[in-house]
Length: 128
Image 1 (tube, rainbow, N blue to C red):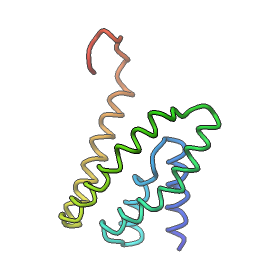
Image 2 (tube, rainbow, N blue to C red):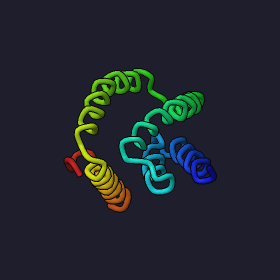
Image 3 (cartoon, one colour):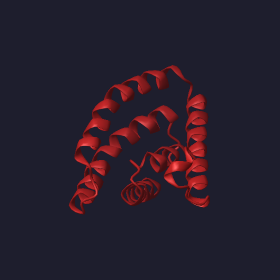
Image 4 (cartoon, helix red, strand yellow):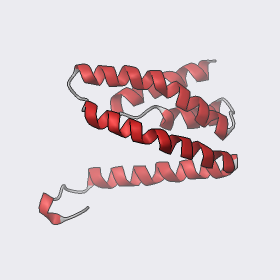
């Protein structure tokens, strides 16, 4: 129970601070510390993200940090993608999902680190 509480608190803090849904903390936390299957952890994380996203979005909205049109557009378009992603996930083994999740996190970490560590380029220099 303590692990679940810590996972929830840390996921919420990370979600609010960095704009993540918390899944980047929830999924590995549930797999590693709660011994949940990857499929169960992902499904549970998606449910847990709903209240986290609502509170985080509302708090950012109060500070003027939400673009409603774009947020609603992305959310609407993501509905179909989410259903397709679940269909694909259910075709994969838990091991394959773990590997895919780990690779995604590594790619994102690399891109964020690269962007943060390299000097900014002017707009006319092309893609980074």
